[in-house]
Image 1 (cartoon, helix red, strand yellow):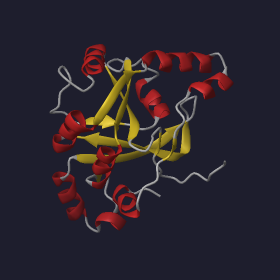
Image 2: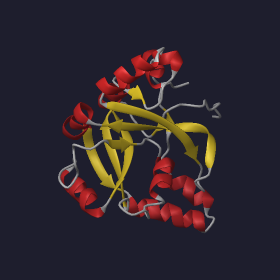
Image 3: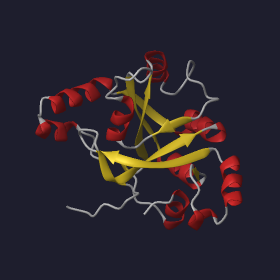
Length: 200
């Protein structure tokens, strides 16, 4: 089924209860997280961490798991109720007048929330930018504690799969790539959350 793509929609791999988000880390953090099935030291809970539902945006950000400090790609399955809590309790990283009315309102919201929202151009298989955007969600303070302690259901290291897909692309085996890519679908949201995160 062909569906018109709106400029800012969440696309993700999800089911009735959970959604997959991606992060990239150095080996020590990634292996500890997979072993513990949550984030433990040397992961720093005091620092903001960014989660991404788009696999290809994660590949762009990590350079197919080749950038320093991003050599391991993790697929983190989290509870949808946690994911939607983050969206409800978020603030955009940039000021939007139609949402916040004034710069002062936006700054107050920015300082009082523990979740940041950014929209960045989605990428295709060759990591070229597309006309529509993908969401990045930054978690700190209360949100990162909920993420680590309450939301995570499963953590898998998908570095090998990421590298396999990259090699298939380099070899121009694009039909095989389609079979291995996560089947991301539009994540439907209620209007109040769409307004909060500036979705379309």
